[in-house]
Length: 279
Length: 312
Image (cartoon, rainbow over all chains, first blue to last red; front, side, top):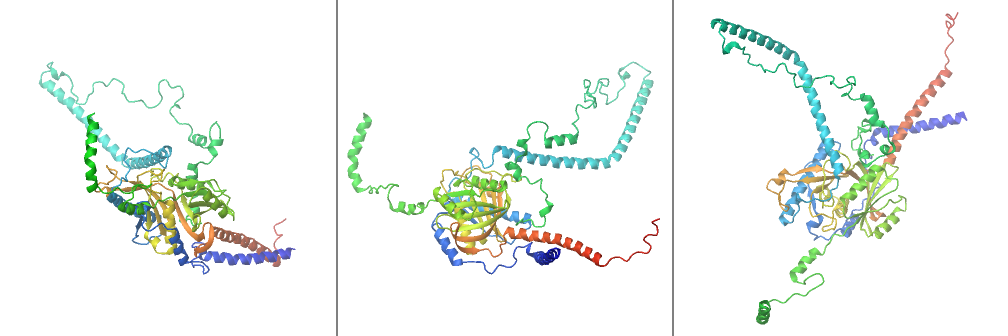
């Protein structure tokens, strides 16, 4: 029994080696690099069929609305960017041609701004798209701010040095001004006059009042021990968002049209090699 | 009173003139006046696009592909959606019956197999042809990256890449696409403006589909300002998909094969190949282990003379 088993295994193994070596030699990446010889291509039959099914030849263009566009050069399929650009160009040029034709017919073809009708995508969906765009924009802005802050930190030392220098300078100036005042008073024989008052240029006059700015820290009425403004534990919040906190779970776990379109949860690296995703 | 009198007078004066100058009235027909130039017009007017497309899918279709189908339905105001059809060998007969029953001339049938592969049948009903495609690279309209939007039921402009006219098979497919995806003029659900454009282009022997919204700055409805065409931008609406033609049949859902894609390998075969490869890896590992075992068994180590040296 055991012997039989082993023989079988060996045969299998050999077969597998053969097949795997075949598949490794390129049939996986490009399906059938050589055309199969048994394939049918009946040109006459196709043309006949085309004649049968086609609309009469004198059909006006307005019924068809088709535009052909000649691609200047071949493009690489796996290069997403250039491929999409080519499609875009085709659409753009085709539309221009079509619009010129329509214009020459002088039929109204553009939607007036006050023409409201049902759209392909609903308003709620468009709102979602908008919010996504906004959040993306916000993210970019935040990242930029962070970057700026990092750079500011680098030059903070210099800024601090400059500030202290300025402070010293200002102090010196103030002392000087007092000295000058005293000298003036001395020269004037300490007469009572309008130069009795000290004149500091930058005095606001309300230095004893509290600054209007909100004090950092705890508000007077706050008894929560400083936890009032703070968000809950981040981890906790995320878990609650994910798994829910109370309420029915059933509805949240079902797929909807949006979630099926959403591929964020999938592992992207798996299929990286072939972007066309033929299979 | 005055009016009446006037009328009487004019009727008195007219009859002699009519005989001399007025041309004879053309004959009245059901459709209008029968006339020379009217006939010329009616020849062109005679054509009316009355294509109706039946859109269905097979049972056990996955949600993603079902959404794609619904997207297509929302793009074609002249289509009729039907309930799912069992995808068996006999589906052709059932579908033909269904198309006939629903008064349609074309059919788009989304066939999902193994919950993985989507095939699309494009068929003209009573007497063919039909084309079978493998659909891949599917993106539905629900994806938030596609930010455009357009009127539901406005007639699309169909743009084709020029390599559609190079071979008979592509020509046939182009004609079918034009008939199926073009919205009939004057269809009751169609809107009279053009604000989106379909792209069909052949790259790498696959047909790629895109749908863009057209946004043009304009004031009038029948004219684009000078420079408006240059300022025109397109925003993608979706869906996206890529069609790989497999076969073209002469009849609808069957008949003689007119074309067969020589480069086509079914996804099943590809998967099987990969699986076998992986299985081979495992077997190799097991074999290696076994070989090692037998080798060890056949060549036992010589007893070590110092083995028990440190035991006590």
